[in-house]
Amino acid sequence: MTDPIPVIPAPPENFRSGFVALIGRPNVGKSTLLNALVGQKIAITSPVAQTTRNRLRGILTLPTFQVILVDTPGIHKPHHLLGEVLVKSAIAAMESVDLVVFVVDGTEPLGRGDQFVAELLTQAQVPTLIAVNKTDLHPPSDTYGALAQANHWPLLSCSALAGTGVMELQQVMGDRLPPGPYYYPPDLVTDQPERFIMAELIREQILHLTREEVPHSVAVAIDLVEETAKHTRVMASINVERSSQKGIIIGKNGQMLKTIGTGAREQMQKLIMGKVYLELFVKVEPKWRSSPYLLNDLGYSLEPE
Ligand SMILES: Nc1nc2c(ncn2[C@@H]2O[C@H](COP(=O)(O)OP(=O)(O)OP(=O)(O)O)[C@@H](O)[C@H]2O)c(=O)[nH]1
Ligand SMILES: [Mg+2]
Image (cartoon, rainbow, N blue to C red; front, side, top):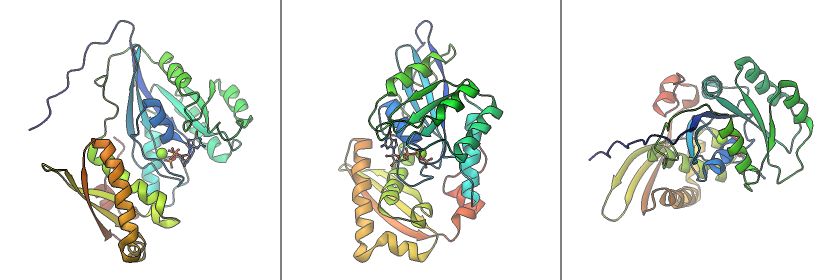
């Protein structure tokens, strides 16, 4: 049986709504900020650069506005087809929104990577504000003030992890949206299907538990989700590029795969608020990151939507 199509109510008077992209270098905290802004974990985060691989929408509905936040892959110099696809996807997002929140890492001074993003934003001529993140760690570097002034971009600071400055950021975004309808039902927090988030939760464990090339060489596919009387059964494959990586993912006596599975299952159970039985398989797909066919197959669309 399919779910009924949700009825989207008419908005109250003077309601505003629109699309806001979170743009920036890898690892500055865009996905952590998305989760903080919508108040729920929908995007995975990790200390590994290039964690986010898909554009993902988070929906924040307050009494006077609805903002559709678009999390994007970090903008970097690509080294393979996957990297190119990621950067193209971020650039496409900045060109199709009402506002960009340019997220920077306040623990570091403005660098060449940020300047490159700033140039893309000025070229795209999209309204922008700068969010200086990670202020819990450091008083923010003052190098961002000059960039903000030169471009007439408002400058805010926040800590996505500690939650400071997040409400102010919500308000400033809301003030800048045009009058508009509810684009999504007011109680929805993401447009992503559960299956997608489940695959991401498995990848998140791998990003946290392995190092060097392994996190970047992994793609996860959900092969089956089946509701039984007792639990939700999920079968997923972890694709890697080399058999040595398969060995690392499985670990001695299967210990690593077990740890990945336990961590991912706990997160999935929170997501679906029910018991999950998870089966993981590890497959070698040589050079999937450079294969248009495999990229497409693993959910990394070559054409920006
Ligand atoms: N101390 C501190 N750490 C943060 C903050 N925001 C994010 N982080 C950490 O920074 C790392 C990167 O966070 P992500 O949210 O994955 O960064 P991202 O910009 O989405 O990265 P990509 O998806 O790779 O582009 C993680 O280890 C986060 O826990 C913050 O406000 N304070
Ligand atoms: Mg991210």
